[in-house]
Length: 334
Image (cartoon, rainbow, N blue to C red; front, side, top):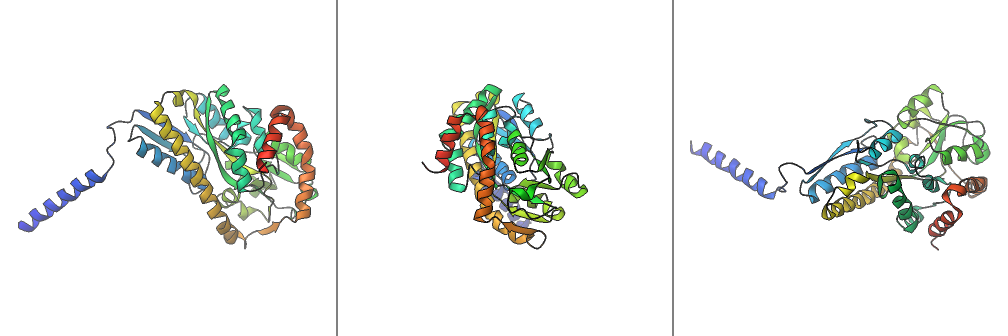
């Protein structure tokens, strides 16, 4: 009997301690937001979405609840953007290539070889140029928060090793539904076709497309290396996601809660970038015996850069020459 009482007291004591140590949240959240994206949950940015949820719910003391809908549960990127505009979804992280269909200045981030390394990426995305473009999204009922990213894009295919632009001739390449990217592959001599991210594996497997471009994290998690022969580490563009909120949802928050949400976006952005860097070396090691990996030579890279110049000329009409020049200066640290 004494033993049972002691056990009861011990359990009661532990429960009281647990309650004391647990955060005290409001009984019901004042706000409930849906965060939708297309990424598999093991990718760095999907993990960063969970980090965002954790930060918001903790630092808002439960006043804001985040419901994450990953892996294209609510549709592809374009559908998610439209749902965010209509406040059916409140938070999203679409690629800037898809957002360019709404705000053409987003074309800037898909210009090949503009961003060359992580430091130039931060200067462009986190600096004045990146902020100016985010602010322009308010015209489309979106609040631009910051930029996440999945690393630099690389090319895979089943036809031949890619060492210079001419090697892409007539290869059927899957891309995002983004005019800048489609124009880039046409300039390189490929036959690009837009296809939803979730359909790419089957498209490659069945030969509907022969190649694709993605950062290493997306290539590995979607197992594209299982149905591709060659991977060239071109690093031709940084795969940028724009973290956005529905404008009305953002405006509904108090200034204090807006600060909580913005800080959580920044924490998640940095977390995604850290995970991406950590993952890439491991991914190369894991897939190197399943796909031939090619490094661009300096000569091959220069040929790609030269072949890319007409793309800048084509899109400066909508991005503006001034914005491109400022982005190039920022990328080069000027």
